Length: 162
Picture 1 (cartoon, one colour):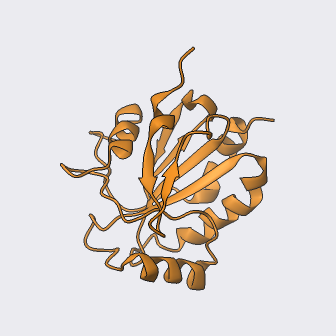
Picture 2 (cartoon, one colour; picture 1 turned 45 degrees about the vertical axis):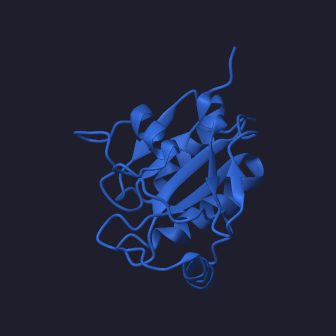
């Protein structure tokens, strides 16, 4: 059986380094496009709680700052990192600012959108849209920005490899 192509992707981390999805085949991965000045920004607290509760059990939470929605993520990499650490104690990995829609959308997000259509289209509608990838990418689920991180716990627990 061939490896799922989701694990072939690399993205840029907030610190400028490279983050590879290779090696995460046995993990449950929670992807969120984030923003520091959005009404949903307090969800960082819930994301960090999931990271702390399930990280040692196989959950990988990844934040992808995005400024495509009403300019709600205007900061540079350092400002984003500082904001998240100081205001929400974020310790889960943050990636570099990324585009999730349009002609400059990162190929990883294009693939996520194909696998988990949103309401009416595959485009991401707003900040804090969430994706949950089960081990081996057997399923990719999408959740609305209004879905609080803690509401994903049941699905996260079902996806964790024991």
